[in-house]
Image 1 (cartoon, rainbow over the protein chains, first blue to last red):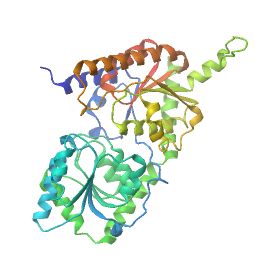
Image 2 (image 1 turned 90 degrees about the horizontal axis):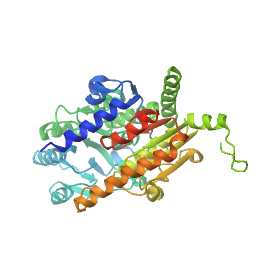
Image 3 (image 1 turned 30 degrees about the vertical axis):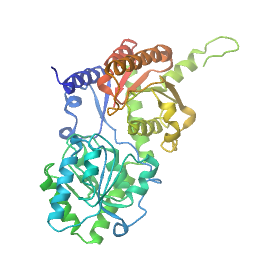
Image 4 (image 1 turned 120 degrees about the horizontal axis):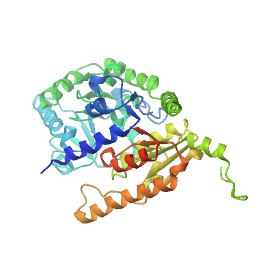
Length: 247
Length: 150
């Protein structure tokens, strides 16, 4: 039997081939989607969406936040949930007792619920988008150990709210972290790597964590406001107009 | 724009509007996050294009939850063509034949939308659910639309 992912990859590839312009997340080919990279006629790196910086903002300094570590997203194996749980358990065996917040839904929700007390975690199911700023402002460090990703909105919104992210080396996430000058990128999606990165951050003084937090916020203000996004999408419009004229 | 009183068509205006209109096709996948992402994109496009047509399913039902996400959009420029259905959740125990029926219904909905709207836009942006959109992209290509893929 042909794997389902292969069928969808073929469909995806044909759509990319038919497109006149393919919008990509970022301008670094090594971090781009390989199918887009290989089959697109024309790539335009403008896809970083806008963040509503009035809604998603820093309301609390790091030291006043209730939860040390957060995991927000779908509770699925490809999001690195198993590794995240193992990493927290590893931290606890080392004597740390971080307060953990997990929010999302998915096929592994009941598994996460089973570990709620062992992880010293609060587990929430789907949180409406308008309640997210409040949630972000109660988390110090957000772990995104995905195995496949582009540039997730949760990362950008978290940066706008001053969270310090710990991300895997996939998609556009390392690019964002590098640009934002905030925190670190995981060497691999393994419990050891996640727990090591978290241990380092948990031992840093609040002053340094607050500096990182503001770096993330500044990045969002410099790159991801609505005005900046409009400028980027005007490039697309101009490009399409010139393509139409050529024909 | 069509002058409904006299029944005449002003070509210049029609062409201007079509050239400055973008149709965003988003496959109606079940996750509410997808609608938030769509609202984010539409907000940006509504400040760039004269008119933005959203073609998707279940958007109207999601609108009460999306008003906040569309807060900064230029709402007068946004039109919604709702095909009225969406794929069921992965966790839902929907029978396979029903899922297939919904899938076909969605595709027919998109084709009808393209036939009805094709003279109103020159550019189509395919957004969510790209692996499912090959037939849609093919028809748009045959109609000589500019296709943008996100």
